[in-house]
Image (cartoon, rainbow, N blue to C red; front, top):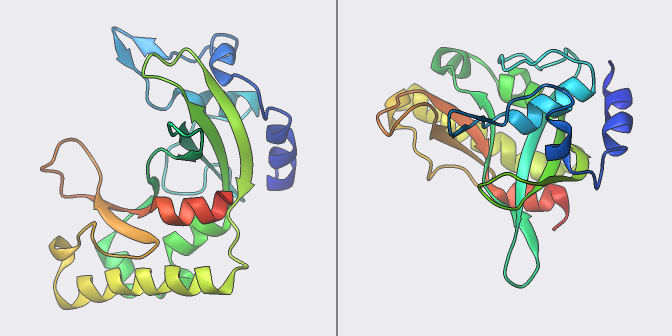
Length: 201
């Protein structure tokens, strides 16, 4: 399925409670008292007739599906609930690769984001809020993302991979990813400030 077809089909689900679709598509939400954290994305993939995929390559070749939970503040305003993981950081690859040839740039160009309303930890409901394509036509946004990538690259080259910290980056930050606080793997994450711009909040 090409990107434009997927976006069109996904937009038909806006306002739909995806939690109610999990059983139909045989996606487990809870097992042995533990939440399947990827259940929402798995339902979306099954709806599109696509295989469940979490590899570093874009899920479906020409585009990649991302899901971002939103939350309602007490004043009713909707904001991103958390940052969004983009791609793992391979220190050798980043060190040797300019931004325009990077995994990060490739991922962002191909990204389709399904925003959804997080109601509670019980996961009794999850409404698909919107379907958004990552827009890199904004030259100022692209300039800052490229600058963030270069900060990570320069740090790896000059100080070492272990010196990367989540405090880096205006829009894109390098953060640990994996089990526990002792994890040594890191990934590029989109901060909530760029998500707000992207989602026009």
